[in-house]
Length: 425
Image (cartoon, rainbow, N blue to C red; front, side):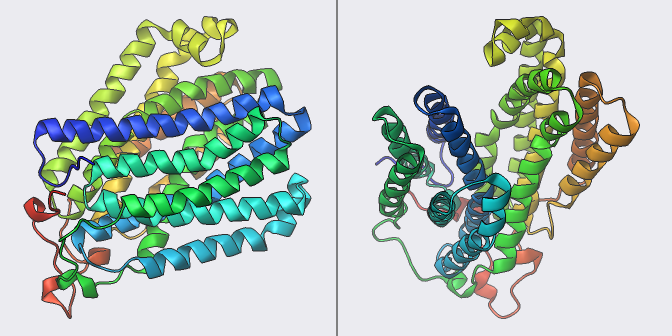
């Protein structure tokens, strides 16, 4: 398995970025394929159950995203520090929350106990996988990260896809997915194994990953999810069904502009964690350029973009495409800054995103007209103000100890310089 680690040349870095991008595309493709097949093979009521389960696992799985980011930052700073104890604790707490919320979920969403149990089981697997993804990301073994992402995606979705094609009902389909995701976990762990001959003892081994770091990153991941979907939820609540459906098509462009440059932040996070400030500037430049390119493309071909996102009946709305794309591009910058804050050990990096979400709610419900255009422009304004504030106040990358404080008891716990952040494997 070819590996890409710290300090690669431009060619090897390009290979790493391409591999991670392909893995992310495959993950998203399988995630989109599953409900599409569900619409063909399941009854309407069963399709609703499947869609609800996927949404619940995605929301609860945010804890896994936070765990991955926290582990990646910690691994970049302290190459041999233990992380599994906190990973198991995070997984157990997340699973416990899902179980504790089961009565409410069953009542409000009208789901049977069997389905809720499957949700809890899937959540545990998805969250636990975050520790191994974080290990390879923090060690800057990006090709292995791409393989691990691909295997996990196959485990999460392939079993359910096969179940649908074979004509299984929704419960059996979810059970097939549960089996395959647990079969994928040992493979992901094997991919993330340390390289032979790699040192397992260094000064960072005594610097343990703390729950607070995982909680901070997890809260930030949740805030990113909430703020990026807030306008869609508000449109559902405030607009007539036809208009809210049209708005949902527009947000497909927002999500495309938002997630297109995210591979940059995946590659940059370990470098930011060890104090490489040049990467900070490069990330903003690349993410900003990508956003500008997408906005320009949507300006020139807005009708085509809407037709691609929702069908020919939406092509006439092409004049709105640049607005939706610009909202996503601005949030991409915001998310890049949030990743930099996590890398720098900033406390509560999610705070500006919660403020932005609250501001958008107030703006759309009490200030602007409750119309398609009112919500659309409010979302753009919120994204613009948030991006401006966060980019201006973006922290410098830091090589200090975890939580932004140097270790008082272990001078050797300081992170390695960037050029020694990882060894070729």
